[in-house]
Length: 405
Ligand SMILES: *Cc1c(COP(=O)(O)O)cnc(C)c1O
Image 1 (tube, rainbow, N blue to C red):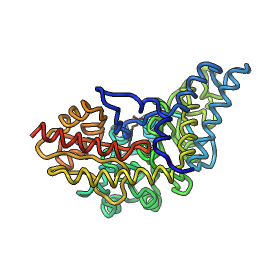
Image 2: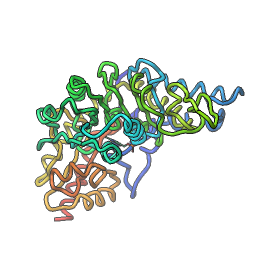
Image 3: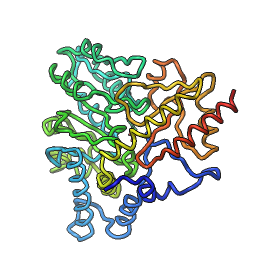
Image 4: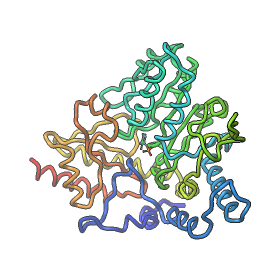
């Protein structure tokens, strides 16, 4: 199927709206992606025709809901090339998945152990581990970045030792767009016997990771960045790890048997899915994955790369504009500032022109500290964005610059 961006845009009702009297130009995809009609319909259909609690009843609605939820788990499994469907844990999102793993490691670590994070992380892949350090007394080490916003692997190599128990890095940086060499990072960690968690929240809308090929121990992501709903996501864990980790929350659905003397836990994946989940969200997550695969990740990557190259050229031509994150392996996220202008002021002016960008530290303050800046303006492109929208952004940024200097 040929890639036709205009046809694709018709799948997204929100892209037809106006903001401040101008056509919406949505360039905040790194914060959350828009939803195609297929995903919206899926949610409406669930609540309109077969809303029921799952895994609980023998009645028809409950069985239909359970089947749809488990079919979504299968879609996730296939998409990420995961060996067993019970290695797919539905979560409330990336943040939830990371906290689940960080909490689970509490009993496995003690003073003298070390864990390694990267300087490129989102706060949700920093803070849960700092909390783990406080509980256990283990030490947190940080892989530094260079001026281009690329991880320095030679420094990573020095940090690794037999004391290293865990390494956690993102697949793609939400603040700069850098694609990290996670295959290499995983291989190096495994040579020291350390496990690896990859935060894939920013990656999965751009590329299709093969989790068995990567041999990663844990991989987390959020549906909402993949055109799915908010409040649902996936934790992948190797079966051996998931069997070892204790449950994160106790409640209904996660038990085999409960008495006041002793409770035994259910098997995977239910051990980690206490309580009534986001049923509609899980089902719609599956629909979002199906939608993205209908377009095809080869096409998505090619189109986004074209947008990134074009936008980088056009923005770089503006005098005084500096792009942060200039590594070779990069996805369609552009973080920038204009000399002497606060990013917030640029964001406010371009919004008046209907253009949605994000300004601030992008939940990644350590990166901003590295560059000694308060934040950046971030334009992040999805497969449904167009070259005309890049032109609109560039014109708006030029206008903002004129108004603010
Ligand atoms: C968005 C994002 C998160 C947080 O995802 P939530 O859905 O808010 O839990 C974590 N890491 C990265 C790299 C992200 O882009």
